[in-house]
Image (tube, rainbow, N blue to C red; front, side, top):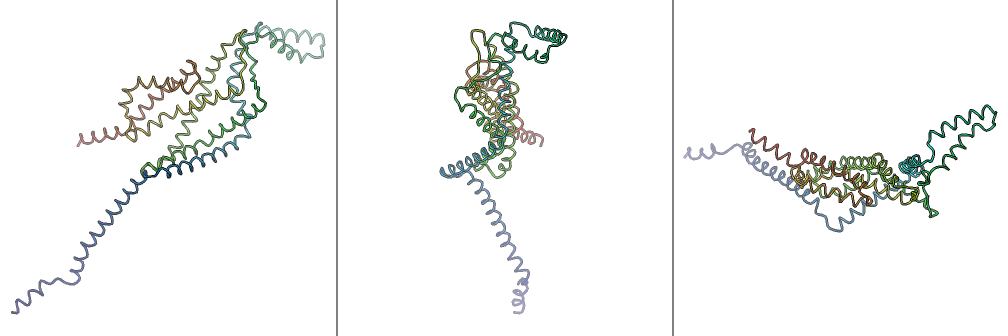
Length: 349
């Protein structure tokens, strides 16, 4: 009787031990539920990033366009004070080309005028001629009068009264775009951001900066490399029967179009980097399609540049080189690299 009564007491756990043992599984379970719910919530947030409706996308697009327009306005106001200097700089490549053509079309050689000017000044000095210092000006006028008129001495013409004013406004607007291009590209990447995961959004600001650098580099390449060769080539077709006098608005539209075209073309490595990270392109696939890329390069150059083979080649050549560079970008930064690294690690293990 006593033994039976003692057994339940002996088997009965202590109060503190029972409570701790009873609480631990519940706490573990509750903590597990919390962690699972947080993981599910995080995954759900990332999955819902790109789930925006049509009107949400349109509202986001409107916001980015408005902010880009404000940034462009600020850039325009900042650059308008220097519109005259930038206008002269933009005209300079064609003016130099016209001057070179003019120098090759003189009836008398430049050496003749140099020696004649020195001899004439010496004689007039001995005769105590009062206007000896104006002899070079007179001979420059004679030199210009003896040139075969095939170009308009490095000048441009405009036929619409406010054309020159609007040319300065257009130059200031384009310069303002290049000035605030990092901000505009940042707005563009923010528009793409809802379709990216959280860990991918940290690359938005660096990608915007790199986009602007590539865009400006392409425009500078067009100005310093393509413009001198291209305009020399075009001006060389001037003859005594066909005089070349550039019209201001046509030249301005032509040059600005080339600047934007080269800026967009130089975005190719960055575009391929983005696609390679998404796994949409691979370096192996790009190598296989190299011959088609060369054909597409000339087609794109034909669309973005005026319809002449020389200018198209000046754009298609860099475009092909950029495609080769993009192959290496896809090789080093694409998903196939991660796959190769995983396979090598698995083989080593």
